[in-house]
Length: 194
Image 1 (tube, rainbow, N blue to C red):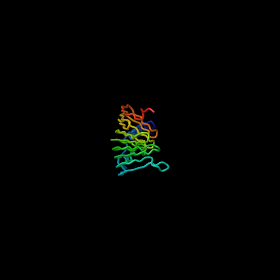
Image 2 (image 1 turned 90 degrees about the vertical axis):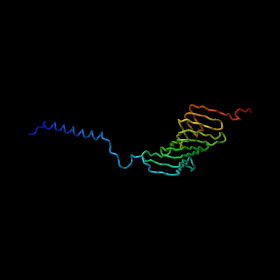
Image 3 (image 1 turned 60 degrees about the vertical axis):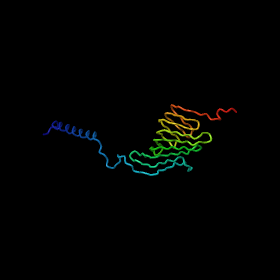
Image 4 (image 1 turned 30 degrees about the horizontal axis):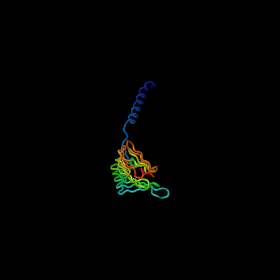
């Protein structure tokens, strides 16, 4: 007759072996998938890339153009060479941003541009044309905004300002500069007595 107490050490040993194998599976790295999904390879390349965002009435809200666009599916990013963004806000002067390179994020809702960034806001009846230069700029075209924490130089007919960081809101016609050094030229009409 076999006693249950004689099997007990074997059962405990079997449970320990099973537990050891299970723990070993948990700590082992997963095998790499052979479908290429973990590689950073482009799935789309476009020369002379151009895109437009339209308002519901069909008017152009902004355009995005690049000499070359390369899309990567693993992180859904798009890299741009020689970038140009033009914004056409209703009742506002046109704004044009150019740069050496850029990156699209969130389906184009965020556009990072960098390298010799030049932002030009056309003049109108109230204010002359303004030019802003920096090295890196985040453009939010749907919101009509742009910002940077890099050094900025703003030039317009009223003077020159150098700053460390900037936030621009084209809809509100505001620009916020941080840590500014500026030279201001008052307009001849400002001091005239009537």
